[in-house]
Length: 123
Image (cartoon, rainbow, N blue to C red):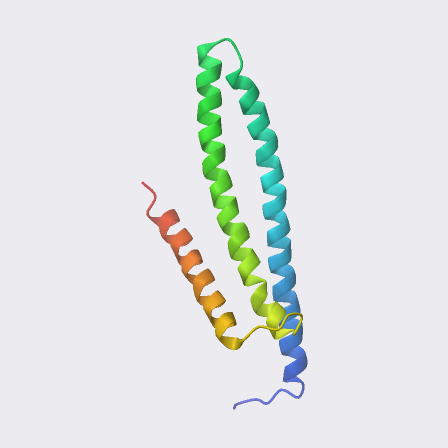
């Protein structure tokens, strides 16, 4: 109550639009990363067909690495997809019950906390 904004509704709407645009750009980045991983996967798969055992071993290692990377990208895409629902609902682009929005927020928060936990506690 220290300061009353004259057009708080406008500021909230603008904040939600910027939030949504940030999430959408993050989602598009995830799609681009998926495309890049697929290209790298095709290259590694060609390495499996080579004659040398060293090339095959390198290709198997690369494919395992790409699987881990794709898993991480998929998780982020899911999180971004769910996160888009929150500002979209506030902006009334979609009609969701407040309970659903709260549940989505809780799920994505837990997903984010798990990702941070994994980064901090890497072995």
